[in-house]
Amino acid sequence: MAYEWIVDALDETWSSIDRSLRSRSHEVYDAATPCPGWSVRDVLSHLIGFELMMNGEPVPEHVGSWPAYVKNPIGEINEAFVVAFRSTPGAEMLDLFRATTRKSLERLRGLDVEAWEKVGWSPEGERPYHRFQETRVLDSWIHLQDIRDALLEPADDHGPGEEIVVNRFEAALPYVLAKKARAQDGTLVQINLSGRLARTVLIGVDEGRARALASAGAVPDLEITTPVALFWRRAAGRITADAFLHASATDVRGDQVLARAFAEGLAIMI
Image 1 (cartoon, rainbow, N blue to C red):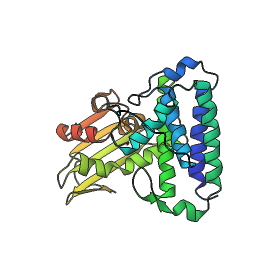
Image 2 (tube, helix red, strand yellow):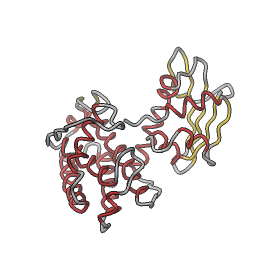
Image 3 (cartoon, rainbow, N blue to C red):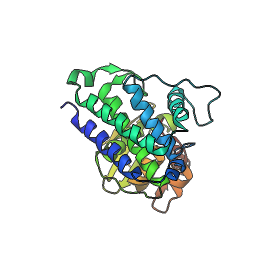
Image 4 (cartoon, rainbow, N blue to C red):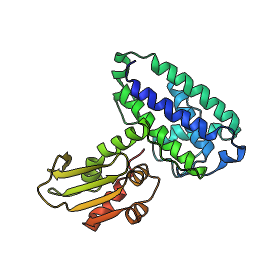
């Protein structure tokens, strides 16, 4: 099957959400999550809604103003589904989640290579379909962690979803440094991530553009050492820049002004 690893990551992540909520009381669906403005039910509504849309269902009509945490057209689509499902009992939501994601997996497993590589609409703009579905893994995996946090049951999840999330956030670091933190030419930054997916990332800035480097011939202007779990939580906007920089497990050496700008810009999830 084409791009089997993406489908497997979605299947594993969605199955983990199902297991996390199975046999829970209806109260847990109202628990607040780290995702701004959303409860467990709202997170589930968003995941269901996006898959319904991918399976051809229309976006619900929304009446009235948007909450402050809705900042773009994708957020409006998400919130329209959230509002539409807000009065639906939790058990019904979980049943609908199972049915909807099962249909999505069946559809994805039936696609050929040409369909996976076709360029079309995605939340990031025009992208190949496999890139779009990889983004669905990232979104779903982060929301799995939102649900676990809301249930006060955080857990390490060392599966393909985590690998996709960390790899995608790592790939965005040059953009964060050059475009969001506005680092000057000649700036060298080293990010050390600890944990199962540990890695060291060197990024240099030249002519206004940043790129990953294999090695550095100079001492970095900024070196940040932090666990993988704190890294992805900040990149997903689930913890503040202060929480990221001042965590006991985070060590910051060098340019403190740049560290602040980098940490602020690191929240990159739509």
